[in-house]
Image (cartoon, rainbow, N blue to C red; front, side, top):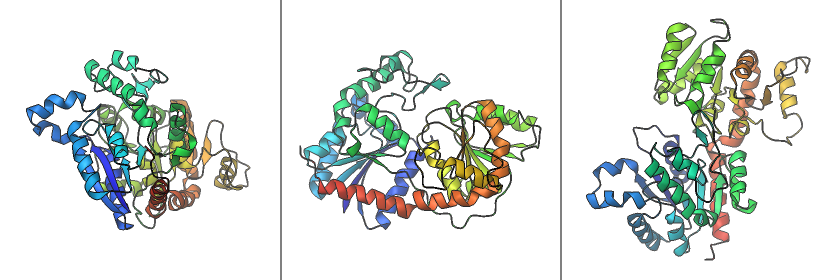
Length: 423
């Protein structure tokens, strides 16, 4: 099987989970015997471009002529079975879908954000969830609020791109929805069920989990939508030391809030930006990982990393987080639903039911994105972490292990090849 993987890499100065996932997926496919033809551009190339190329940049999200030329040559030479698209902006453009179809090559896209509809891609503006552009032919609110790169001109360009390429996106042969929430987003956009496959990302297996540490770990970009301020508010509602240690890793505009909290309370430790060794050590030192997103976070990789290391997760009930911890399924096998998990975690046959407002899943708990709700859940998660930890690791092995996920992806490719595009 021969697959073109197309991706516009985000700037290396801006840590990107999407870049990491694409790299990891290419490695996993190659190890499984798939011939991968990377068609990669990077936003880091922009400063060194020629004056002519830079002059064409404003139109590249709509139509990137150089990328189409290079892709046509690649497709003609190698005749791949499919093209797998990740991020097309700004140097590839959604036009690569049309180019692939012109060569008779079916296209699958992994949906990492909400940029079929939202110019910023995250459905979040001015500190709150925003879906003002949903259902509009042209995203005028995005232009008004300068949602893309805080620029009215660039927001107008992105909104226009989304309008121009509505038909392009609806022609994609298969969509990979990373969670059930993304599948719902695609259905609302008009994509039929038969073209949507729910397949999460995977992370490498770190091996047998170390014994649980103590306290909590928050590891994410320190920005408003990621909810570190929500977490700090909830944490302050408990006496110093009552919950063990809160470790915070990452960097971003809200770093001063974290540094102030660490200076104020000895039970808050700021770890800064960690490398892979540091991440592993921080996870092992903790008992519970927190995902306090204030937006519909698509698929926080930190949750999968936590489960792989046998750590349960306490998250907000937004985006893909309920799916990841197993708290979103309305019909689950007997003994694995939220009520049964709550009973088992309590360790008393159900005599201690889950407190109101906290929903238990197989690998952790979700609550409303509010300080009081998160504060109430913190001691519950700490007390029940040891009982849930084995189930967290089991969920990783069954659903998010590279061997499982890579097979699902190859099955998607094979299904597309059997029903080759008819344009």
